[in-house]
Length: 72
Image 1 (cartoon, rainbow, N blue to C red):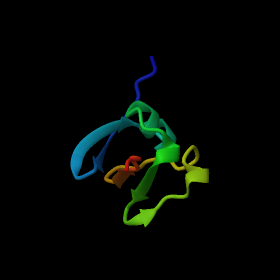
Image 2 (image 1 turned 60 degrees about the vertical axis):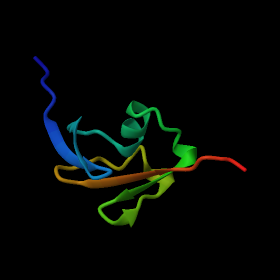
Image 3 (image 1 turned 180 degrees about the vertical axis):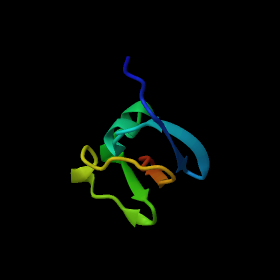
């Protein structure tokens, strides 16, 4: 039986749970956010977009996501 461990993180100031091993890329996909139109801050540091699929979230990580929206 494969039971995923849940981790609590802070997402844009709110409590949020993800499975152990969850990456920034998986989080953006779950939230239906295009990673080309967003910036992610992890624990006060801007995360490198090239590493989103390699950066695994840890318990109590603080994530802030900023969406870029076009307009005129």
